[in-house]
Image 1 (cartoon, rainbow over the protein chains, first blue to last red):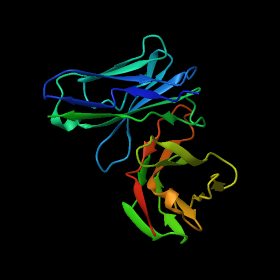
Image 2: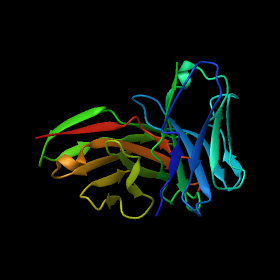
Image 3: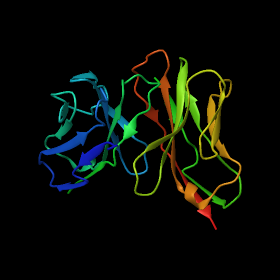
Image 4: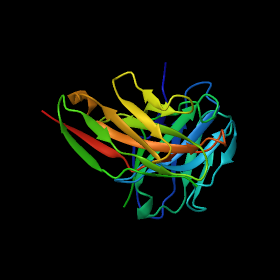
Length: 115
Length: 115
């Protein structure tokens, strides 16, 4: 079956612009996660959705970052007034229930470059 | 809070030789432990996990890891590596008391298989 998909695969933007990154989870998975992976680092947790609601957004670095999942399926990560330090690969993962003993399935990521 | 340390950023090893990728964690509570693998140009995949029970866990492709509570370690081993094992390996931890807890990743170890 189809895995987690993310669009676009690459996004180049200028400092100060607004960007949206999209994640399509595996059908039927209630849990959805966003991570950020900077060069030479492991994935860093940003936010976790259980259904439509954000169950844990403690990883969002500041109020320029926001994510939604209005119908409990597709999610969009939104970054306002982008900065060069936001450049990274943004990963999305989904899980059947969100409980930690369930495997998280990762998408290929969106590489964001802020010039 | 939990943290993960992967001391080796890169590990070169000859084909058919054994390998150990080191992982140490820090936590004040009981944990779940994971190894994820990222093959070139692919997304992260779960390799193996320790949740409870036997401290030695194995993957389908010959890797194994042993949970050592006294040494707070979860090292990954394989007795004989193949070119196809070339990838980046991430150790990760989560608090087991909170079934919805986020996963904290290490910085990763890049495994180079030499012919």
